[in-house]
Image 1 (spheres, one colour):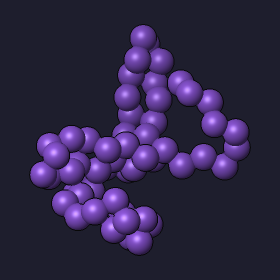
Image 2: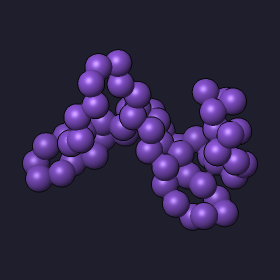
Image 3: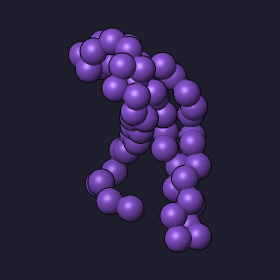
Image 4: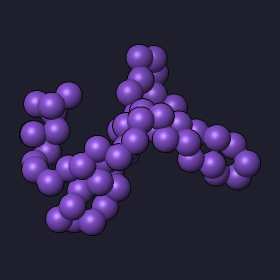
Length: 55
């Protein structure tokens, strides 16, 4: 995971694991949530073993 984040560039801060996000009364969970300091943006990473389903 460290090498993957280094490929994206520096400036990432780990914020939370299994972050719950509610959309239209449904709960979704992001596996990893980071904050990029220079871009001032949240970056969510969802790890899947099966086929991807956009939800």
